[in-house]
Length: 279
Image (cartoon, rainbow, N blue to C red; front, side):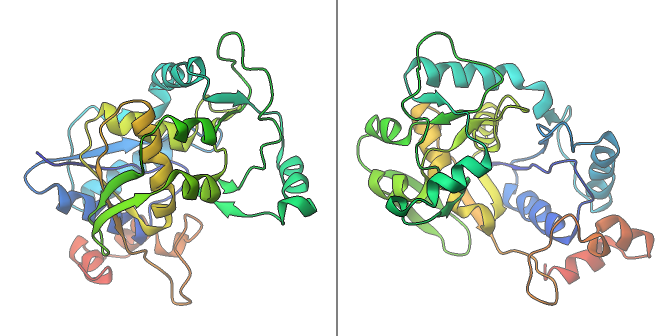
């Protein structure tokens, strides 16, 4: 049975891009299960009123899902357990660098200038030699030592893409290291990171196909690596097209003019929204 999910953050109004992703995930579930998950690990920006609006907008679009809805803020012990496991296996290290430190180190002549990957600026490894003894630390960023991590994996990482460019995918350990660097898996103010939380939760909810926008396609190799390291099932990945404005820019939550609630207030119907999205 196919299990898909739509996992918004309650930090602003849902817009047409969210509608397209949710409707696509619902359709992809077919006769299986479509899940709603609230990704609210950013406690400073997440608001209960936005979470309520998410439920209202999605139900207005005609979607339904099993209750209760999983909320990431209730899952911190699970993320802590995953971090402890990776720490005990010698795959994490504490990092005290701020963005300025990383920029200055990445801009050094021997580094060839800053490069960017799915975790932002590719980290040059400044703190990689820090002490890793003792229990897994709290309240300090923890990075994945990617070189050590990929050394635990035999052969290339493999997964299936079911989106517009469907087919088998693979990446070698060398290419993964070059493209990502050492990503943060636990942030000081969250106790986890997007990359760790999404992998742990997809496994917990037995998601069989991850449906999301093409802007996250470059993060997939990292997510597959984490799944392999933690011996979790690797789902299929369906990366869909992005909804853009008239200038070609991808919609973001600041685009209130394209908020689903605003269209609803102006008298649009769910069928109108589907037509706008080309569904």
